[in-house]
Length: 46
Image 1 (cartoon, rainbow, N blue to C red):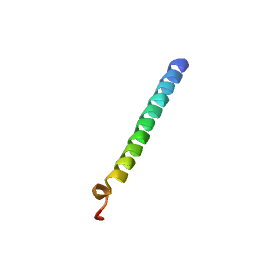
Image 2: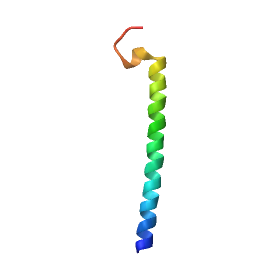
Image 3: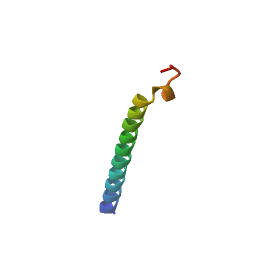
């Protein structure tokens, strides 16, 4: 039982790392888009 629980937690940790890395890449992409299109992210005119 202990081994099974250990493997389950290891899988969950790996999945969380993948999700967090995907979220980081999405944030970076959104920041790049914000740099290209500042009018879409703020009320300031170009």
